[in-house]
Length: 166
Image (cartoon, rainbow, N blue to C red):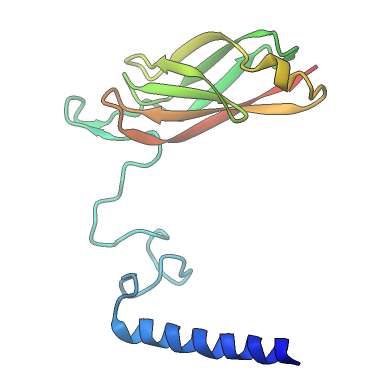
């Protein structure tokens, strides 16, 4: 019985804390509607008075005069399966022009690659940590991309490609 009373006392105390927080005016400002409101005519999470951000993999580059993102992003890996000692070719297109993309195999960094002026890259690399990942034959892992400008500003996470461990 004392467990139930303790739980009730906790809920009452939490209600007072929340009520005080609401009355203090220190809640995050959502404007007229919270960002998850489905009845809003604007994109979720956007401020109607602010310029829309360029989006993942895009940034305004004054030198280019507009989005420096080339086209819809694509990523492929060849071969798509093999042993963990396989050397793969990772090819990407539609990335931030003249930027950098960091490649990750599951949770292990593979390396960084420079993106050309057309938003494309090709990298030939060995899969990381073969002694560890070879313990998982029959599993498919993801090679993911994280994009940066040439100045190192984070642009977002890009597309992924799958590699199946034989």
